[in-house]
Length: 373
Length: 142
Image (cartoon, rainbow over all chains, first blue to last red; front, top):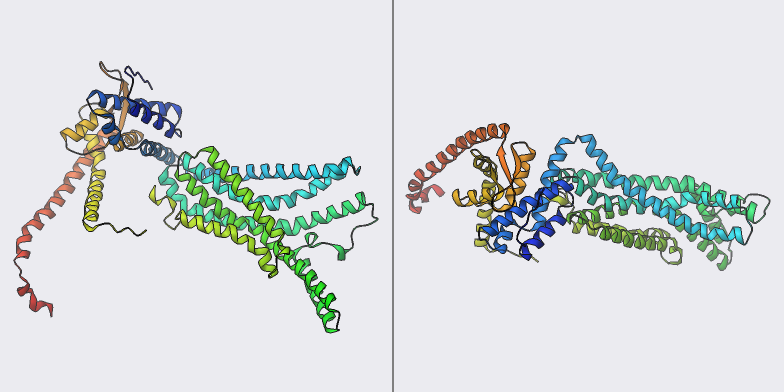
């Protein structure tokens, strides 16, 4: 409210008040000023009564703890005035905003990248702008499939620290086990949704892209014959049928005594399509471990309040880069030896192990990570 | 990695924890009691609770508690200039606070009487238990 400091304060006290002001950031400005004036008056009175700055500050306790207790008291009061519907809405907003922002940012970056590549079609190959526009449009679902897992990670990464600033510690602690379950369920749901998108929509848009390129750019007369379709243009069921057919052909060839080279080539083709088949399932599945990873990292971040923006953004960028590196390993995994299943699913182990490790380190148990706050 | 606290340190830690728990429960009532007759500011309350009443209370605990009681509308605050020193935030009881305090005080007295009765009883029985020597107890152990 008012700060009438006549004598200069000892540096230790002035520093303490400055730190307190920083830690009280979650409070509205007016309340913050009120608290600072009151505690400042207390310290001044203490000095006037002959107490040493050290003894005074020791009695007060660490600025962070005092601020946390004050902020928490205020948030408890606010929470009690809020209904359960308002709490649900806050959770949805805290998780939804990072998801949308991450999706839009990643989408913008990837579309920009694709546009850059396609621009050459217009300038050098003289392809109509409209055709290139459709190429970009048909590319969107495929881009979404790989942005969803990273956006899922952002929900927990940014959402939990956000909730920690708008909810009191007791309320958050009470909700935490349910939040963890909700995060995992949402992660599973996003995996299933991502699979559906990849299987039904992306296969179709890939098919349309290939036909567009054939007819309008390569000037072919008709769409590609079914046998020439790549696994990326097929649904899981179609790929499975092709694998079965190819395997039968390979066995027949081996039985009628085809050359070693022929059988080896067929094996190689079979292996490649089997990796693609597993990738159709493995790529969307990233959403689940990444959701868990983001939730655990977010919980760790939420413990240090207020979370500096640079830390949040830094962790978000670093993990995103790491994830795309891992995911591109998965796509390049045809080059690795070993079973097709392992080649496709192996890289997924990295985020899964990371999630489990951070989950264990953050001690996210049934009692909840906030048990010690 | 596996730090084992010394038994005696553990015992005194437990006592400290227990002691702080029983204080925590009664602090709210004491704070309301201190404000029963006059408005006081934070520094004054700490001085009073520590020196006059001998209740060890830290500033770090007091201010959040004042905040909470204010949120619960048991106390209210106003700022007042002082002749010497900074302006101070004074707290007084509200009507609800006074009512609450009276009920807490009655409840506390009833509780304290029960606790005291148990303690007095334990002290009365103590010598009798001591009188039993191992020899006396020996046959019962079969």
